[in-house]
Length: 213
Image 1 (tube, helix red, strand yellow):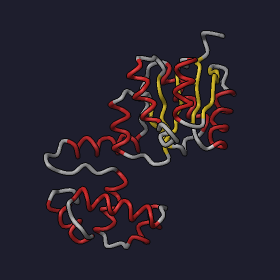
Image 2 (cartoon, helix red, strand yellow; image 1 turned 60 degrees about the vertical axis):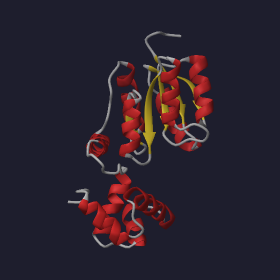
Image 3 (cartoon, one colour; image 1 turned 90 degrees about the vertical axis):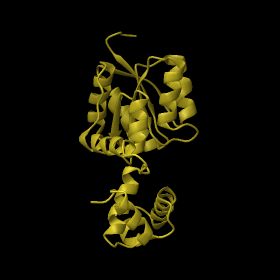
């Protein structure tokens, strides 16, 4: 095994996406694919056995998600660095990942070539957080530093703002490209965090706490 090549694991529970990223890694002369996994447990086992330089992990996987694998790597004192991929750049998840020592956090819309560039950068010790990820992280830090205010995810903040604009749940779903069931789930969580039981009260409480412009 050439020491000049960065060893890489790719883990994602969607076969087509996983294969696309694996192909991109395999096409790079400076990267060497040492394994693929379909869930977090399998990924962690490969990491323990092969100790790749970088693991590219989906945030949401069966068994263990990407953040849980990252935390397990840290607890075990392993040297593998992690690039997390997510379909939804959630500020709360980004915050947890950064606090756990993530090397990079990218949207799953990122091209294979760009993912490979980031893998190489992370292997060199760099931390890569694109602008949209930094925005969610900054919002999360500000929310956590606001005394007494509930901590909302980036998605919950979007839903709250659209509620304040008067949009219905179906309209919010259409705007955010999410199912009505997902929007209802976000609304339930918002109500719980704000300590209210309906939309009007949620908006009023959020305004009282300075959570809406």
